Amino acid sequence: MTMSDEELRVKHLADIQVTISRLAQNSFTIRSWSVTLVSLVFALLNNKSTASALAWLPLLPAMVFWWLDAYYLRLERLYRRHYAQVATRIANGPPAHGPDVAPFDMDVTRHCTAVPNLLRTMLAPSVVTIPVILTVVITAYRLTTAH
Image 1 (cartoon, rainbow, N blue to C red):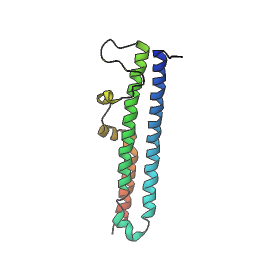
Image 2: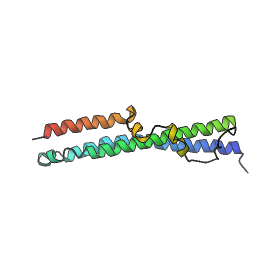
Image 3: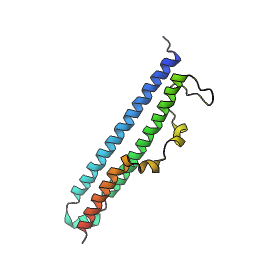
Image 4: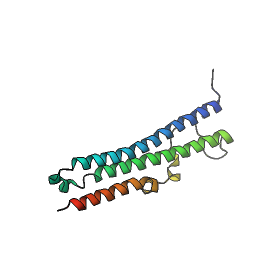
């Protein structure tokens, strides 16, 4: 049995939605891990003799996870844009102007100009909140452990 073009495109939408869901879950996991790892580093720094020298160490995982969170959010936004394009293709048929979206095409690079870049995504309120809180906590810890 051969699937029609529309059936293939609906399946394509389902595949894009699965990708979007995975990216959203990755972002949530990254936020959880950032708080957990920074807390773990604080626990390891509980020894007062090394705490002062290494007090800035928790900033490293906080910054790495901040970048990862923004990366996954940007990818999610790209795939949401792609989803909208494929859904519009299903609803309206092939575009009169411009290229058509092939069934199962998962290339989102054509949407890069329509989605904020990685730096702007890093500064989005939903992304920057946890790193800012962690940085404030780490700075407060560093100031209280300074000799």
